[in-house]
Image (cartoon, rainbow, N blue to C red; front, side):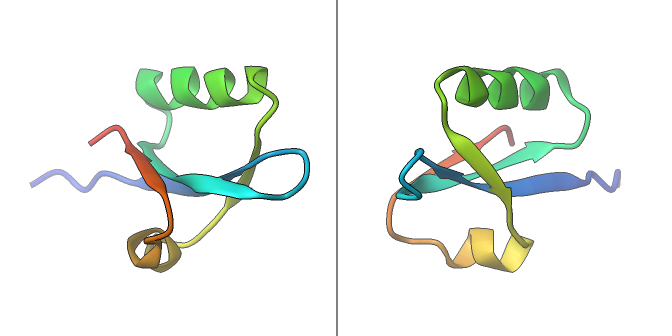
Amino acid sequence: MENIVYNYFKVSDENGETYGVGAAEVGSKNEIMLIEGLLELNYSLVKISKQEFEDYDEGDEIRNF
């Protein structure tokens, strides 16, 4: 079985309000498109742990898996 590594992040606006969390395979085309799209929309991304991603239940989750 292949061991895939993911980046986990929190999506926030300019006021620091969190809109959700995301996970994307490191270096994948989906990761690049997702990150660029969120940054173009002026969202801030903050790196979080896998545990923080799994524990998040207050909003939306974005995944590429």
